[in-house]
Image (cartoon, rainbow, N blue to C red; front, side):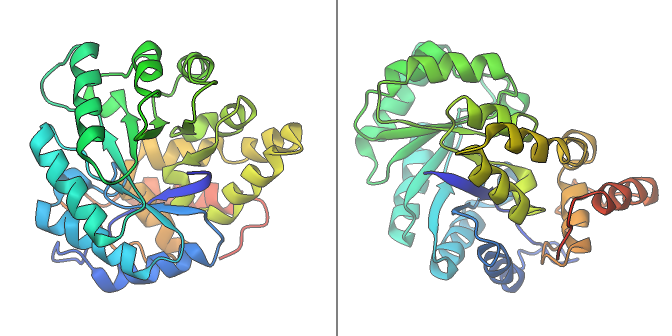
Amino acid sequence: MHGIGVPLVTPFTTAGAVDFEKLTDLVAWLEARNVDFLVPCGSTGEAELLTQEERQAVIETVCAESSVSVLAGTGNPGLEETIAATTAAADAGADGALVVTPYYYKHRQSALATYYSELADESDLPIYLYSVPKFTGVSLEPETVAGLASHDNIAGMKDSSGSLEAFLRTSNRTADADFDLLVGSGSLLSQALEAGATGAILALNNLVPEHTVDIYSCAQTEPAAAREQHRHFVELNAAVTSDYGIPGLKWAMRQRGAPAGTVRQPHQPVGAAAQQRLVSLLDGVPNNRS
């Protein structure tokens, strides 16, 4: 996968059901802004708050509506359920599977390597590793990634460590492999692109996709200009990730006309103070267009 990928929010109704009509509209809204691929059922999609049946229905809907590639989130704590979810995503028409590190229990790096290797052996879809230690409590170490990168069916990784050092170490160790290294932390967008990232899967891409598409394009030939563009979005990225999370992201998306829906409990809508700050940050987006 290359370019700007969107870890789709999952729209919910006020009653808490998945709003498939809004999900369909969201796919169209994002594709109109020239994103390169879509990623349903990731962390930003509140995947852990969906039933397995809902996850599959979301992936099926996105695959049916999308004209760009779909990288489906299929990771679960256990290998068997991940294999089943990945198989179902392949049947739905996904182009790849994004598989988060197994969570809840703490696993050694050797166990993670075995898990991903066996999954890749079984899968009809290319496997993309997903390291997001702030949620799972475990990181894929660069040496582990380097070993997995040689597997014929392990195609890349989303690195959401938030560490440029970790990204660079992983990049160095996978430089000779046919391996897509995607940045998952919006604060590192321009730096990671300059360091060789093949693309970015960011919560921010739901909100200002036309701008992150521009940053990615600019980074290919004018990295200094890309850094300058990126600078305008650092505070906004922090607001819709670490500060206010998915509730803040969805609220901000609705202000830009995106069909984001609401959140699912135990998430709660953002309050007035957060809304006021988000409005201020959105007003500061250069050439903000809806």
